Length: 253
Image (cartoon, rainbow, N blue to C red; front, top):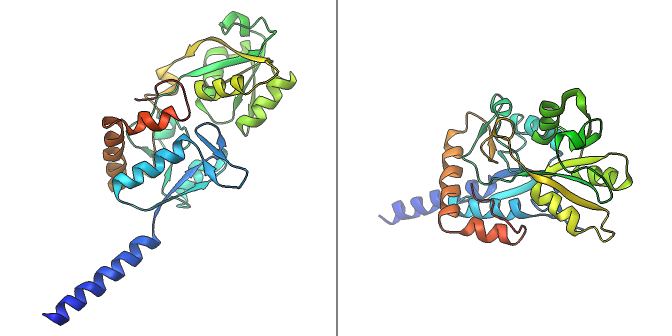
């Protein structure tokens, strides 16, 4: 009996070692505040980072959050550089051809931002013939392509910070981004040179049902774990409490 107990203890110790060495690796962009951003000390932070840690806690799984450039974030998942994506990625039919998704963990409308002295009011007529900026390979750039076609010029950017820089410098006439990011831009603009224009931009055909965790299609067990964890943090208010640290509106799906 003593030998059996020692054997079980050794097996549990070995299992714990293997378990601890293989956390869920979650990729985020690290350049899309307030959802994910890189701090001066090099650490990644933001709403989605806090939420990722809360979800891993509910799943009773160790996790690590790493930074990956947006344009390579899906290829990196498919190449198994990490196990999941939490980078404000809308669930769309096009993306769902390549990867799987959890149930939505947040819904965030988009907004147009324009110079404060501009006549642009967010309407299609006011944007006709203008140059509109959006981050590359996002639903925001797709929205411009879908709704404006040749009526406006789309200019894409690798990061939200570069998009904002060109908007402020006058190299583009307007930008489209998530409402939370747009709100942060305006609040953080001491010169009051930019403003939100128009109404929230909502189009389920382009933006899908919400933002979800990107996963490899074959990882059904991990998807089920994320789905249950998301439902748990929504139900008990944890998601709302995390969101309140970063945004002043509801993101609950």
